[in-house]
Length: 188
Image 1 (tube, rainbow, N blue to C red):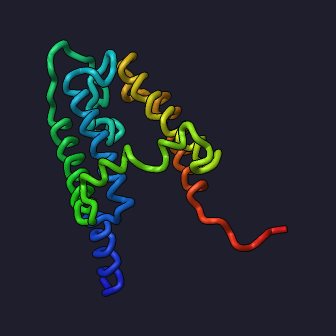
Image 2 (cartoon, rainbow, N blue to C red; image 1 turned 180 degrees about the vertical axis):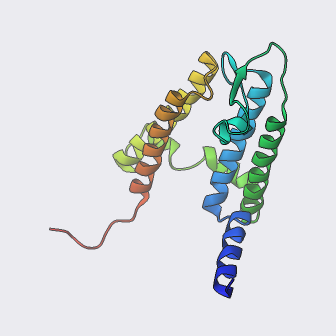
C-alpha cells in the first residue's frame, strides 16, 4: 500500500470519527431517531403487528427475518442492543464535536428552537417567501411523521417516510436557497 492510500484511508476514518459541525448535526439527529425507534421497538410500539429485527432489516434478511410477529410483552433481542449501541456511538461522536465549539451542546439545543427559520412561519418579511415556505415544509414534515406515528403506530412505514422526507428535504433546500447570498453578475 502506498502512503497516499494510507493517508486517504486515515483521513476518511478521521472524518468519520471526528465529524465536521454539519456532519455532527446529522450524527446527532440520526442517533436520536435511532434510539427513539429502538426503544419503541422494544416496547412493541414501532409497528402495529410486527417486532422489528434491526439485523434482519439492515442485512436485507440475510441473517434473519426483519419482521417477526409482535408479542404482548416487552421484547429485547440482541439486534436491539447492537442498534442502540451504534446509535449511541453516533450520538456521542456528534455531541463531542458540537461540544467543542463555543456555544456547546446547550447552544445547539437552543438553536433548534431559537433561530431565524421558525419566525418566518408567519412573516415573509423575515427571509422572504422562500424562507416562509421552508419553515412550513419543515414543520409539516415533522408534524406529519409524529402524528402518523402516534395515531397509527406507523413509525417505520415507508409511505410516511416518503412524505416526511420529501417535505423536510424540500424545506432544507428552500432554506438554503433563502440563505444563499445574492449573486453579483446579471444573467441578462
